[in-house]
Image 1 (cartoon, rainbow, N blue to C red):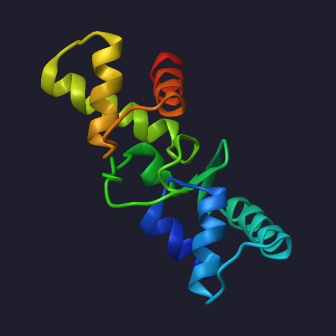
Image 2 (cartoon, rainbow, N blue to C red; image 1 turned 180 degrees about the vertical axis):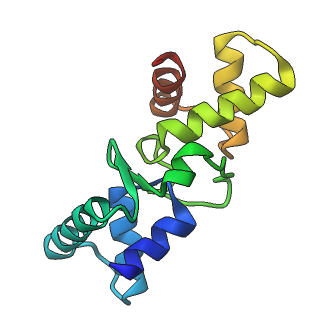
Length: 139
């Protein structure tokens, strides 16, 4: 459990599948098998019930991390961390807030492109576009 907590403390909010992948890599393995994923899920349940971190829609983070989300540049990352589904709603909303604080209100399409750019994406594919819109419209 302490290894999972350390990963969450550094990476949170982090998607459950990405947490399992990082945990697997930290233990010298290359593939997240069903047994490892099951063990990570069980350990996550214990960590959440012990208050070590929180879980929101398959994303894990400390209370502080969910309250004040860091916006990360993924331009040097590779899949799966660049998949739209692996970016938390809280990070996208935090990014939107930063942009509107700096630029004021801007049209939705420009905001989506700006968020995508700040997150380190060179282009906004349909999955990322949909994820961003869903996150910033859902209040």
